[in-house]
Amino acid sequence: MKEGLFGEGFAIHKGGKVEVWRDALVEAANLSGWDTKAIDNGHEAECVKAIIKHIQGSLYHKYSTLEEKLIGIIPRVEKVNSLLRMELGEVHMIGIWGMGGSVLDVLVSNKGTEEIQSIVVEGFHSVESLNFTLAFKNMTNLRLLHLDTKGMHFIGPEYLPNSLQYLNWKKYTANPLPSSFGSGNLVGIHMYSSSLVELWKGVKHLHNLKFIDCQESKKLTKTPNFTGIPNLERLELSGCSSLVKVHESTGCLEKLKSLDLSNCYELKSCPSYIMMKSLETISLRHCNYLRKFPKIQGKMDRLSHIYLHHTTIEQLPDSILNITNLSVLSLLGCINLTSLPNTISMLQSLTYLDVRRCIKLATLPKDLGNIASLEHLLVSTVTQLPSSIINLKNLKTFSVVEPPSSIPHKKRIP
Image (cartoon, rainbow, N blue to C red):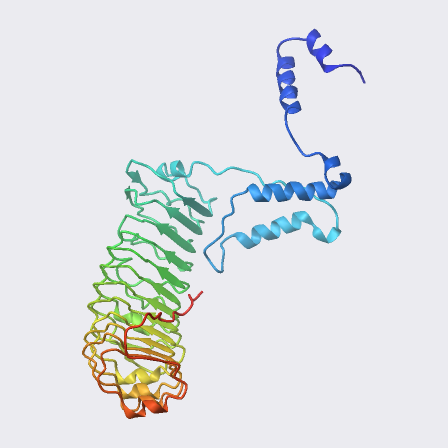
């Protein structure tokens, strides 16, 4: 082993690799790092903790919007755990490395292969029209597709793999989804602010599909036939301002928990009846042309919140008594509502009833006082109150004017 100064050695040997090594050593000498001696009296473990904390604070944190069934996560976590071998109580070092490729080039150039299982890209931008016609043709094992194309114009895709479990494509500008697409593995469709006029034509059998979210899709005019989607739990179409018709099959979705059609300003047609025993909340707020509320067929004892404010509904069906656990009923601003069915008096879980600004509603049901659970009764145009109202022993709010008031909203259903 030779001893001496690096500088003397470099002075003797010049050029070639020696120059490269000299530059590298100079650069390394100028790097600032962590001094173990300066941290907790030289305790190495504490120094490592400090470094990890610093790195964690510098990383960009990204969280999934899905509550469950994160595609591909569990096997990879198990792989990392197996490498760590925590049960041995030893110290191991693992490096997680690799950079994302040029995804856009892969899609446009049709370079995808069966090795690709997930694609997540947010915020890529192109001023050119993109051709996605066959972009996913060879990705036969693709399970997660999450894209935000920010309204860019693109052609296609004509094909989406049937291996897909989750499709999230914001600002999707093609229409409709590929006719060949019918993944029985699909769990969720999220097409926020898309240009879809309709999701698909005809009937698709998607038995694993749990939610469809097409909020703010301004060109969507109708919903598809849901006959082949018996396990759908959430249908969110709020802000679909051109939606005119909700397919009759929607009323038979027995697993559906949440139906949000709020701010569908042009909506005129809903199912004539509903038998949705799992439904918990329904919102038809600001469906300005909706005149009829569906008849209730069979018990719907999980439905607790109904928001109908600012619709043109003329009356509620007598079968509303089948919604035995209804807690909140908002009819604020229903300008064509002329009466409430007397069967409403049989709803013994109702706590909140708002009929303010219902300008054609002059009276309330004579047996309204039988609703022992009623805590908040808000009216403004009613000129004749039933004598039974004195029986409302639990009434906390009785408003016959227009004070500021918030309608209680049910928490979002996971």
